[in-house]
Image 1 (cartoon, rainbow, N blue to C red):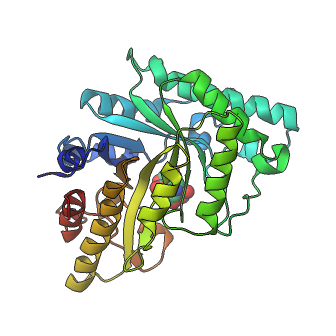
Image 2 (cartoon, rainbow, N blue to C red; image 1 turned 180 degrees about the vertical axis):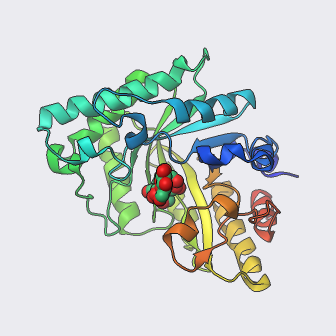
Length: 325
Ligand code: G3I
C-alpha cells in the first residue's frame, strides 16, 4: 500500500511532502506530488516566508503561496503553513533591526495576522485548507539557548505571545506550532523547547504543537525519538515531523540505500508509536528538488524518490514503519 494510506491505517492524520513553486512546471513531478494515496498534505517550502510574503512594509504578495494552496485544494490535500516568524529568509526591512519594541510587536502582529487570515479564507474556501502553521521557526540554538534574532533582541520573549495570539485570532481552527531542527531525540534543545512550551501553555498563550523538522544524517538517527515525542505529547500538545529527509555522502551505494531504508523505518515507527504524533511531511519527495546538495557539499540523495522520480528502498522503509512491528 501507499504512504498516506498506511499513515491513516496507523491512525495518523496525513503523510505529506514539501514543494517549491518552480517544480510545479514539471508535469511528471506534479503527477506524483498530487497522488493522494502517497500524499494528503503539502507544505510550501519557500513561498510563505517573510521575504516573499511581505518584501516591503505593507506590501503583501501571496501569489506563490496561493498557487500551492490551490493545487492542494484541487487535489483534496491539506496544507501546512510555513512560516510566520523566522530569522532566515526574512525581509531586509525587518532584519535591519531599526524598529523599537512596540513597533516590532505591531509589525509581527500585522504580518502573521494578515497571512494566516488570508489563507483562512481569501483563496476561495469556506473552511480553512490550512490545518496547521509553523508560527515560530528555529527560535533556539542547539545548546538550548534562545537564538539572538532581531525578534529576540528587540522584544525578549514577548514576541512569542504576540505571534501566537495573532495566528490564533486570524484562524482559530488552525493548529499552531513551534518548529525546529535537532529536536528529534532528547537533548538540550528539546529540553529548552519543552520548557518554553510548558511556560507558554501555563500563561495561556495559544500553542498546539511541536514541529520536529527531521533533517537527519544516514546512520545517525537518534535512539530517543519515541521517548522525546512522548514527553512533548505529555505537555498537552501534538507533535508532527515536518521536514523529514535523511542525507548521505555521495556517491549512492546499495549499502547506503539499505541503511537509509532502515533509518526511514526507524523514524516513522517512532511517530507511529506515539499517539499524538499526528503526521509526517518529507522535505520534498524527490532528490531532484532536495535542498541538501545545495547546502552540504558532497551530500545528497536524502529523499525516498530518486532524481528520475523512481522509488528508492527508503519508500519501503516508510511503508513498513507505518505497520505494527
Ligand atoms: O529564488 C532565488 C533565485 O531567484 C536565485 O536565482 C537563486 C540563486 O541562488 O536563489 C533562489 O533562492 C533560493 C531559495 O531557496 C529558492 O530556491 C535561495 O538561494 C536558497 O537559499 C533557498 O533555500 C531554502 C532554504 O530553506 C533557505 O533557508 C530551501 O529551498 C528550503 O528548502 C529551506 O527550507 C528550510 C526550512 O524553511 C526551515 N528548516 C530548514 C529547511 C532546510 O534548510
